[in-house]
Length: 151
Image 1 (cartoon, rainbow, N blue to C red):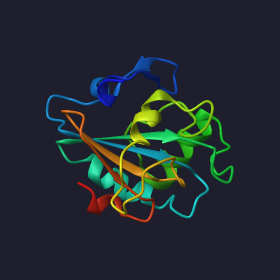
Image 2: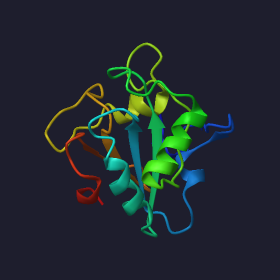
Image 3: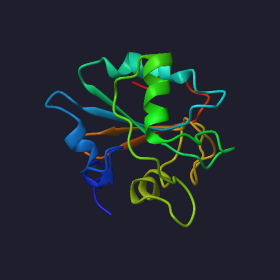
């Protein structure tokens, strides 16, 4: 399937991009996280925003409504909520599916990685995090792990 940094997906504006394109010349780590606005882990937006300020880190959020229907909002509602409540300015992509029949190809690759807890397989809940290095190496972290502890 190739390097996950080069797989295409859509922004909330419907523009096709890749993780690599969202990074900059200093990016050496991309943090990919499936996000939701009505989850017990939603407060992690604060920590994700904090690590997104590091020069070598690019955080990218992928809204997903597959876990307890905790991301029902429109793209505009999601952006308004995260901006107003958590001051998020890292990129949020178009809502997608991280598991199942309509799983996005990026998450097909990410779900093959083994987590910090030894788990490999489908994403279990909102705010599961993946750190991808520029050479495509993937580290996986459960929802319970603070974003501050992964980079």
